[in-house]
Length: 545
Image 1: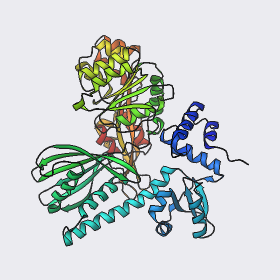
Image 2: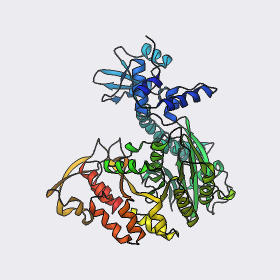
Image 3: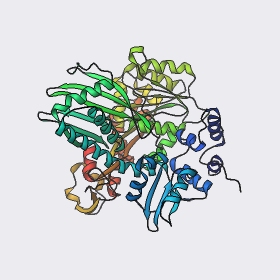
Image 4: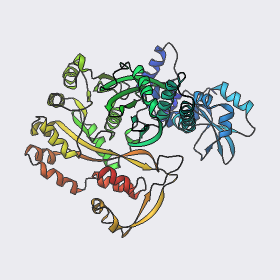
């Protein structure tokens, strides 16, 4: 029987459309090096990791892997971690013994080799590529930590004699990428220099390095980013690229001169990272219903509001990914471009060449777009152009740095946008935050009395019984201080006729009363997560106050 093509399987399952399949097939045909159709569909975010894996399972006749397991460390050591990561395969121990999970079941060379070399009785499965790499990356992280600490110990004992610092910096960046850190902080103190990673929005101390080595490692950063080495006591913004796990990460460098020496922050931007689907960000169903409704409107501005690091860009791209199709023209202006978006024309801010948000938004209107994404509305000119684009029939997505949805209206008004223009052009404001999720492996249940709740949360739990079940962070080898990854909490102000009338009449204070009419607020949303055991009361208080 002929093997069914993966595109046909995904089409039959209604994961992709016929237009999408034709588009992907045309890409594979045009590439000099023929690319697998599954890879094209995944890279263009037409199909998710699990969709591809389940389709490959059906295509190959292997079972899809969804069992409980632990990674077989003896097999990892025997085969080699680098080989397993290159071939995207992981050996696991299940209740039935040793098994192998592949992302690419038609890798005959690897499957044959494992069939010959490994013990009898093993089973082969198909699994999600991201899940397999995540398992292997946890092991790689431990190896990287050992390597970094080993280099530091050699420097302490023998001093500098070669390229140790270049290797040290590379391994520190590798370790940060594997741990999903967004920033690396290298900071001199009076006696030592410290290295911290920002993981899930929180700075986490990693290690100290000798103070006498600090300036040397800064020299390595300066050399990579082409900063004049002697300019230690100046402010610097630069960039360089770093390759890890077979892909390139953009590193943004910020340097400030402290009293003990230059402080460096390295921002890690992986523009090739996979887009996250809107449904997987953690929005409550009521929020998803509102977003679905407002995105169906042919024009209007959708604003995502929140402080720095609240996931605004990720949400924008998740919405954009929901809207994209072959027949839609999408243009973006960003500072910087953080995620590569299939089927979108992405422009990056470059003020030296007069490429600004306002200038780009004005030029975009002559480029026949359906959807315009403006990375941030930060000045009156950009606000004016966003309003103009909306009023001329375009769908506009953007962000504002404000604390609440209602504050966004005040902010736009401060940017010289008339209230009646705001009322007629904005479709909705999504105000959001990111909260850390408790590690499912080590979180512990506790019962607390309602009277010990923080005053700011008493209203959210007033209908609960006197004793409330919550969960607290503990900490284990699989998490960061009891937390693992983040999820979104939000409140959405949808511009229905009632809201538009209030804004046009300058009755902004009345908008705050809308929250009492059944709308899910930030505090209400995080209270839901506390009840469900997703996050802790301490984390909720840290984020929402």
